[in-house]
Amino acid sequence: MFFFDSTMIILIPAIILTLYAQYKVKTTYLKYSKILAKNGQSGKEIAEELLLRNNLSNIKIEPIEGRLSDHYDPRKKKLALSKEIYYGKSVAAQGIVAHEIGHALQDAKNYFPLSLRSNLVPITNIGSGMAVPLFLIGFIFSFPVLMDIGIIAFSLAVLFQLVTLPVEFNASKRAVNLLVGANIVSDTEEINAVKKVLNAAALTYVAAASVAVFQLLRLIVLRNRR
Image (cartoon, rainbow, N blue to C red; front, side, top):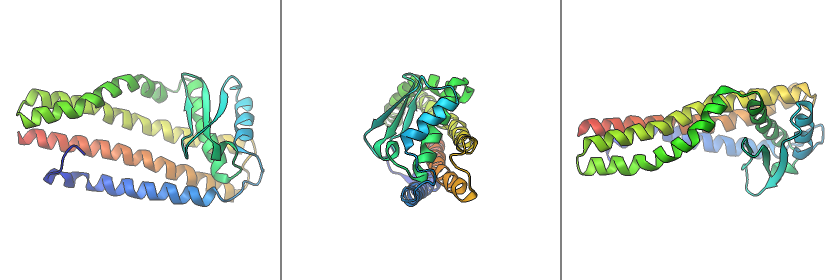
């Protein structure tokens, strides 16, 4: 949060949303990770079936360490699934697997927001790394130019977070369609369960974007005080 002062109040709504999102994703995942999917397939089996159905058999599926560390790597064309999801046969597992395959489909179809986010990664990494020290130096020593450069650099991180939102929401929408289309999920109860898991996960991205936007607003307020 850089440092504490009266402008911290600006971040309170985003902090509350972040805490709620963490609680929501934890409780929702725990609930539906204990409910077995009616089709009885493991995450790996669902991934193989969905990839084959969508002509994405070139994508590798690998188990990885960590909890909820699942992701799709567009550079390596690899679907990395945490062991709990890879071997799991829960409703939560099938939703998470389908979501990551949604990203693979985005990559295969050159979905613009995903391409834009991928291109922003190196720029964002540099910008976010420079933003804090530049702004702090400018703030402490009253160098407005450095503060402005820091704000511009931090804006790149904000842009990345905002672009991430349509990428994640679209992947979740694709996930539900993939599962229903393959008849992996067929009844209303399971469809709603999958949606709840995906919506809870999506809320964490909304919270992250909110923190970034409000932090940028805070920097602008601090800059104007100088």
